[in-house]
Image (cartoon, rainbow, N blue to C red; front, side, top):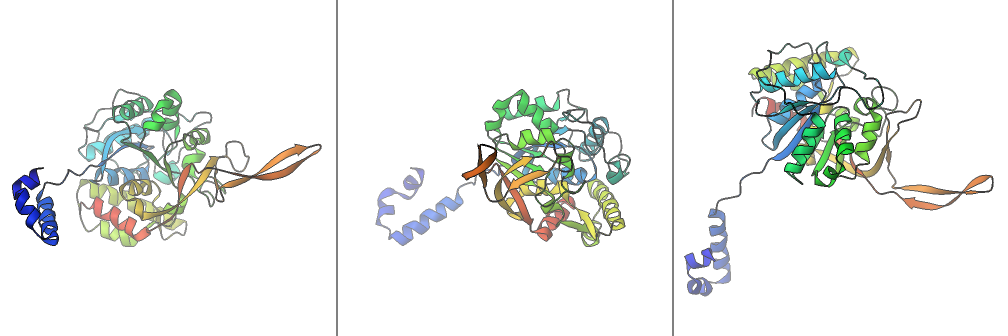
Length: 360
């Protein structure tokens, strides 16, 4: 043992226990620490305005190593989203990150785009310079599969749009499921929707894909409306963001200002930080409080299609047909398949966002 040889075994043994322990601690403290290992993530996105906030938070956080960006249609069409992703990666001088096109439409329904909320170009009508970066030739789901196999048990998937690309990857190669470290997705709600009474937008845009992802059998955290609706980006945080300048800072300030002003027209004091919340949880899971539960996605209801249905009690009644009626014979336990975020330290999250965009 190098430490004992350095001190001298016989002299080390003659020292009092308290002295020898202190000496050992000092020697260990002098040894080089292992290098900080950033969390490897694949960022799957439908690049609208809050996706822009989320992407820049990820690219400006040393805790995260963005290995790829895959684009899915949602807030905007697949083509517009791909161009937006390329321009933002170029703005950040990160052409080293592969940006790949994915699905062109949801699995079974027509695409619903949201320029109403995100501006005509999806980026709050902020025009970025043409991209210096080139699109990766691989199909987004194939790129996900390839990277997961290349780094087994190391990749965290962070989808902040409809879950079409993730579902396609799972359907094509189910063997990636046990190889993915975790999934941290922005989507869903257990307390009502934001596109209608029941459904959250990302899940509503492809409920079948969402059901595939929720039933995948991998560690999954649902960062839904319960987080974004509490973490409002108000004028206070916008003013803090405006105290510094730079290409990324100014771009995000313009996008955030658009969102704050838009929210104000609907009587809200600030813009919900939906997509950035999933990235924030990937950076620091202590920002949120979670409850484990089994979550299913409603795919057929007339008024509830796209609803994420969380079983809060972990049990269901067992009904058995007896003649002309069903009889409750007992209660069966239901295993959780997700950690559902039910609360957030909003100010700490928002301060984290502002500080990272400002480069602090």
